[in-house]
Image 1: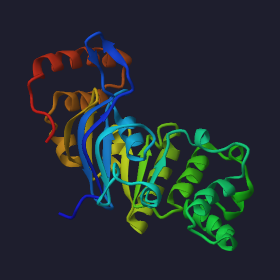
Image 2: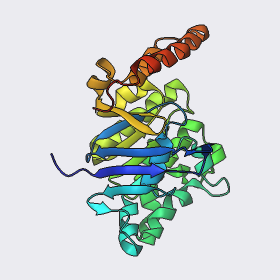
Image 3: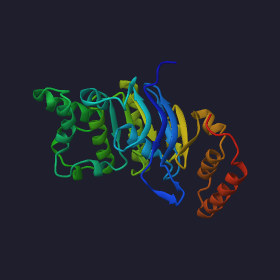
Length: 283
């Protein structure tokens, strides 16, 4: 197997949240992950499990300890221009596109900003490139003059994707990119991301709580629980033959649409934990 595009070793993220007098809880606690070029790794777990903290660590938005290597470069050792070149190949799509877009600036200028900052396109070619990027995400090139509030939620996410792919990144971290969208719009965005991956060989670290979405888009799956990685494997291995009690509980919860069943499921999860606390973890 080729050298991983992304390799995470012993990753720890701590926001200083004191659990009790004797213990400080790490948001991410000793996680090891790898991601190959062109691959989609689905990262799942309940809220607070550490998924987004891993995402923010990879793109440098939060402090961390351990080791993150991207495309053969140790992120701890990079400075100045070398770090800038690596960051060009690492982009992120957030859950709330409206929160990441400047409401006072036309979207064309917002797509153009990283292109100019990295010297990716000559200024006289900027308008053409922005139009091309909008068309790549199935928006009209003339929409560059419009402001974020003039778009629907799904269209704003397309704008965010256009901005992310503008620098031709090798990896895009997708942090719940469809969870704020209607189901029909989710399907459109997932189809768009799949097409971009096939056309451009982009790798995705895809974070979601919707297991159906994760199964649809991922090559491999990693399961997080209370800051720790408890299981990894191919989609078929994790979904069809889960090994860890928490993975089994997540999958069981998907099959319980009634509120009363969910309450029973939470009680059963606690029982499963108690009876399986010594069971196997990550594959």
